[in-house]
Image (cartoon, rainbow, N blue to C red; front, top):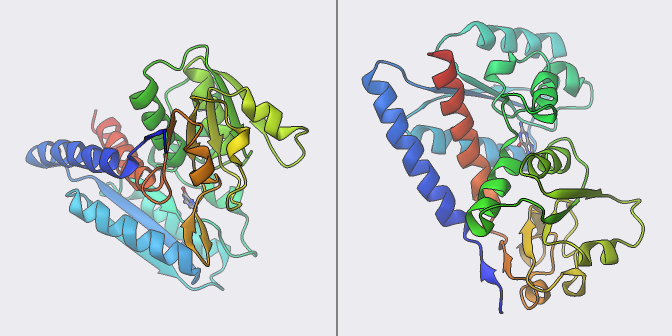
Length: 282
Ligand code: GUN
């Protein structure tokens, strides 16, 4: 192993500590940030995430409100709950855990959240604001990845960045954030031709495809910074989208899985909740 390990677990712990400090200061002014998390259905991975979000929210000193609804809940009922949370002044952030059951219109549900409380940054207004350089809520996983990149590299200006994956949750907002930091950005996806060669030109490589060990060691430019967003459950346990053993022989720096981007996601959710609370209270 020659690459520097980018320790997202330690970075996230430091971030949570700073958030807890700000939260304590807010509470002295009589304001307690509140995060409402809505889970529809029984998806096992979603249940783990939601439990973890609630626990870390409480540990930071914020109020956590959890709403669990059965799989067959009518969409109108979920929309009514969102409206109630929109109007509730003790709720500063609202997160509806995805994926939603098939009978629901995901975009309609997300866009029902008041944009100021959309701590996921998925509302169409926040997507547009990010794309046009206006103040917005920024999606948590890309935001956490950006923090790790900035911490390791300093300026990203002029660097060549390849993002593999074009999801609304990670790939597209990641590309926007890299562009905002003046990187030269390419988004690659399942139809991209000659992906290994494209990756070999990248100073920054972000893998968000959801396929175990998809990115091979010989795709990596020597000295590149590799951010592995993948969390794939396999018979060998949790593995990323990057063949870590091979990539870490070539890269300059790389995030491990677990312990890289993963812990940053919830820490950034708490950061967004704090930001939403601060904006709501002038
Ligand atoms: N499901 C997987 N990742 C996420 C996320 O970042 N936010 C929400 N709401 N659901 C998810």
